[in-house]
Image 1: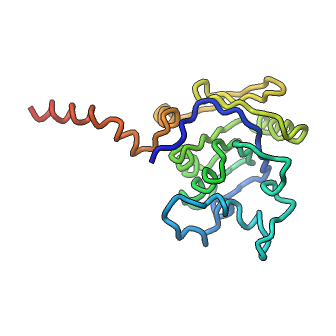
Image 2 (image 1 turned 120 degrees about the vertical axis):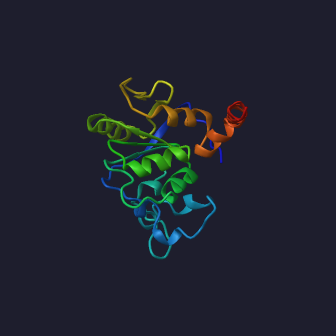
Image 3 (image 1 turned 90 degrees about the vertical axis):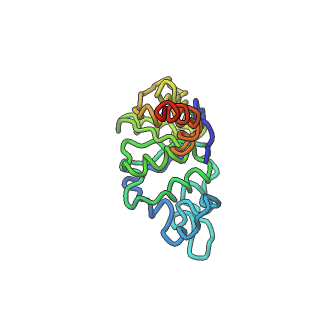
Length: 198
């Protein structure tokens, strides 16, 4: 399934300065029964967002109208725990296209990229600058450039580079997951197979 192409994203950020956010907190296990990648955003951070009677918890950031945007800014070790793809599904379905942290769990990082979400790993010092910029002005925008592999704080012009695997970068730029990539190479594969058969 193809996803939105990712090139340059300019957006405000939603701060979640909590360390060791694991996949069960991102999407609780009781919501994993669905097999279609739909409506998971409704239950993103479900137990942090809602009380037992389903009323919103006013002190949780996603329930605060001050914060919005397509960039989720998390604390270090984001996406730890089990390898459930549903965590990435929930983040994407909610509307986030980029997650920023100073460290990601590897499996979550790969799941996110396969869902069309760009995980941007920055230094702890730059992550702190991002949190402070949002705290000072929630309307502060950030520019995430996948081609240049940089993230910039618009208000100050400060930027930092991030790493990404070349194959994964190409997939995000084209809106491909792994299967889409192979399907895009169908004619090349057929030509190669035909040449080998001779």
